[in-house]
Image 1 (cartoon, rainbow, N blue to C red):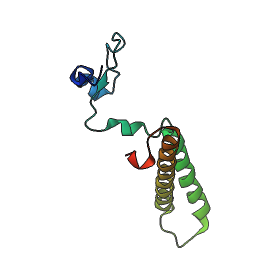
Image 2 (image 1 turned 30 degrees about the vertical axis):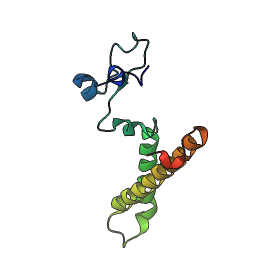
Image 3 (image 1 turned 45 degrees about the horizontal axis):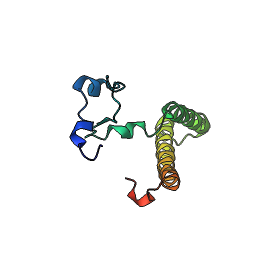
Length: 118
């Protein structure tokens, strides 16, 4: 059904819905699947799946720990900047691990091979 008439099922999202990140209205009334184009790949903002607050708390804890731990070091000029740098590195490492193992998990539990996941 979708392969015969793809233009009927693949639509552009309304501008207001796109700008505000709202769920498109009127989708529930259809029996056929409706897909919306995503030219800017907005789905990538959902990759942390609600772990944003946890990552923020981890960053705050790392910065605070480095600030308290390096308090006695007289040679260190900016403890906060060191904490921010370490928090940034840890954050990027954890996001890399989540992306890597998330792709492996999707490839393992689906019929798509890992190299086909973008």
